[in-house]
Amino acid sequence: MNCSWAKGQAAPDDVQYFLYIRDSRGKRERECPHYIEDSGTHVGCHLEDLSGLANYNYFLVNGTSQRTGIQFFDSVLSWKKIEIYSPPNNISVYCNKSYCVIRWEKPKTRHKLSNMEFKYQLSIQKQSTKEHSEDQLIEVPGNLENNYSFPSPEPRPKHTVKIRTSDARIQKWGDWSQPVEFGSEETAPSLVPIYVLVVLGTLITALVLGCLLKRFLASQSFFPPIPHIKDKWNDTHQPDHQVIWENFTSDTEKGDNEEILTVEEVTVAPASL
Picture 1 (cartoon, rainbow, N blue to C red):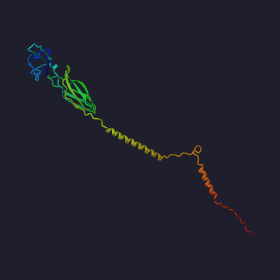
Picture 2 (picture 1 turned 90 degrees about the vertical axis):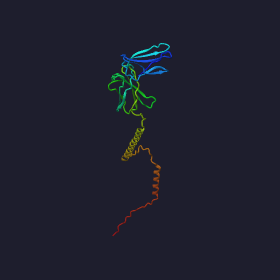
Picture 3 (picture 1 turned 135 degrees about the horizontal axis):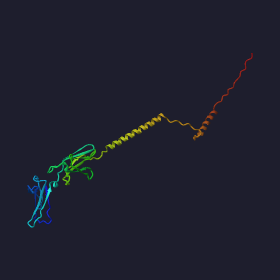
């Protein structure tokens, strides 16, 4: 246990302080065994052995000086009001796919206390690559279970949790426990699935276009185009009269050069008897 006090502003330079402790029943009184000094003046006391202290104790700080009298300070203090609790023991974390359960045990105290006389504060930090990690402070009353369910679905980034303790009615937070890690390191998303999707999309598109082209070519071979009936009345195409005339002229010239044979029928008179 540590006790501390400050030197009075009007105190002389040769002032010295002494601490005396007596239990409420007046059966035992003792002076501070180990003083804390500042420039030779006692300003605090450290006690390792607390076996002689009761629930209520009388504290007296007396001052002495060769120059003048020093006003003393005394007070009756409840052990429960001055005790600052240590961090909880055996902190553990168990996780499933949707949440994590944080468990701990109540700290050791000077006197035996029930679980309901404590309250706890949890600091849950999400570790990230940013400059500042995300911090959540959660107060949990003491109970028989001493646990807290923390929603944390998978994939779960790396977290740390630390816990400190206070009295349920008198808020005096003690020191934080050592951080306990759970979750995994936060990694950058992989580009492999994106590449796979791009390749699969390209292959599927090529297969679909190939099937459509093959079907189109097959339909052309099985169903050739039907020729249209020529419309002589509306057909705007004019025949090439020059070619037809030349052909006609050529045929006429051939007819003039041909030899013409004349065949005459001769009738023979019958012979007379």
